[in-house]
Length: 109
Image (tube, rainbow, N blue to C red):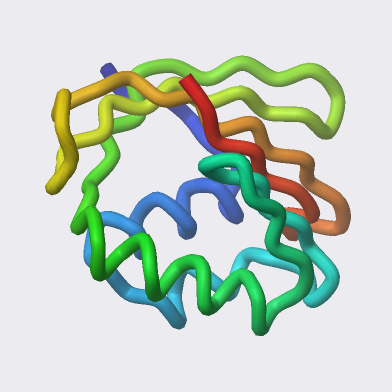
């Protein structure tokens, strides 16, 4: 299924699938917040560390299966494959966008 995502999200997923940390970080605002696996990461440095750790640990790729939008909030369902029990699994990426940047990302089931 082809889903039309706004450019920051398309760029994020394209870089994620290439395990390109610099590319994944570009769409985020400098004061963005990421919530994943029960932890919160604030700002570019913390988000970079999270990206490096999770990329090294899980080596995931994401196939975008569906996306919905409500104002600045995007909910993306992704089929995530990688080095983790239960792979592949569907995860939901909840993004908030402002000024063509990702300001918040929460990842969960």
